[in-house]
Length: 247
Image (cartoon, rainbow, N blue to C red):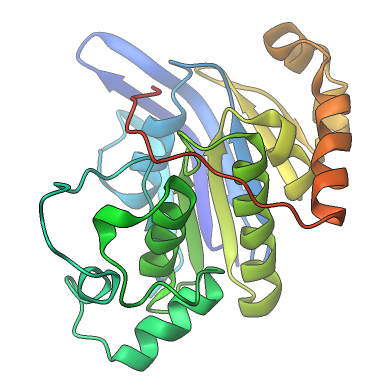
């Protein structure tokens, strides 16, 4: 049984239709990435999947008992607020220190437990958000433009960690991104969205599809080579976290 099944989904805000006739399935253990230009309905689709908005047509079915971990595009924390990473991770659930530490290790940030949230770099901040999403061992990890504000290598490093999480925990991943240069090679399946599903399939199939090229051009190949090169050499860069809106 699919973990998530979206069938003929329509989403409208008032008179404006943002998604039309969108269908997708998320199977156990796979990484599916939704790509599309700004305003293409990516965030609306994710919000419909988690039940935050009601579709105007079609259906979203989640496997009974499905546990979802969510990594938002951005989260603003008042820099004057004294809160450690551990305290932040324990805000919503009364989880043990051991569980917090295990989640940070899974997120690739084992040394941050005692750090102040205000002192984290952009990459570290996103790792903590990832740890928070992982803390209760989800079946599905949802990521909404989770590397907004990181540079290309910081983004690549983050997505590499997502691949590691999938490999080690078996959880499925559904993510939306505009960063084609790193996402394409980290995905089992790519869905190209522009108010409707333009094309979908393996990264290679989508990258060569006319609909995809019409939206994004053909420049992804060289960037994929950069992504592989950097990860073969273990680089990890990031910028201080910014909170700019994307979509």
